[in-house]
Length: 332
Image (cartoon, rainbow, N blue to C red):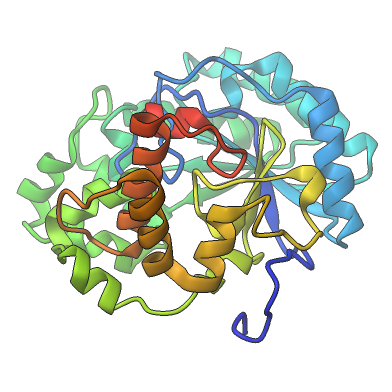
């Protein structure tokens, strides 16, 4: 459905969310945005949030979800986010959490009660082997119990993993290798068949070891044509810096003000090349203008694209509004 559009322009917004922060207590192996404790403890401000919400609603989208990073790491900031969204009469679908903030039931009930007063009706509680590498499962159980006490809906993402995680000691963390040892060597490779994981960000590194890789030339040969998925708006994100992330391609950005306008090749050479010519054109541009040379094999065109972009930002020192936030490339 994207093939017919000739110009690179976001014409509508369907369903999406706002990334309040990239800072996180965890560095999950499937994280699309390379969130981790290494990021600066920055949080979205009210002016940026209002600007994003006005842009979203102008495209007919009247609801958002809130995620990170970990939104609960800044309680005052999260309260502001909920209050601001509600004041603009935008529906809050859910807020995401990894439950790392949980200490004991009483304080969790107090925190959730205050957030419920500000519009929190549903909490997406993350549960997966990737999260369990960093967060003891008793915290997840505690947050779910506290939600029930204050009558906040729980959206477990995903509940299918609950019995597998619960089979381990819930007072400590467990690496994915323990899951592979208990449930089989193919455990990791089967996870993307059980629930949706976008193979970008840290997931590229995680799944390369189980899915195999291709040479640079074979990767190009298998991916001819433009990257029209950059137009996908079915699950969009804006981040705390006001960046729209096209097609969930983390590390690529369109400033909020330019969403809805046709992007010129002069102002957006990297995105325009990817949209028009795909990874082959982007590789040629990086090689001829910046001296890029492939250094390994690749899981996918997204894996190759990430390496090119990281080379441009980290090694060449390219400063571009298209390659944002820079911390995405520095904190991998």
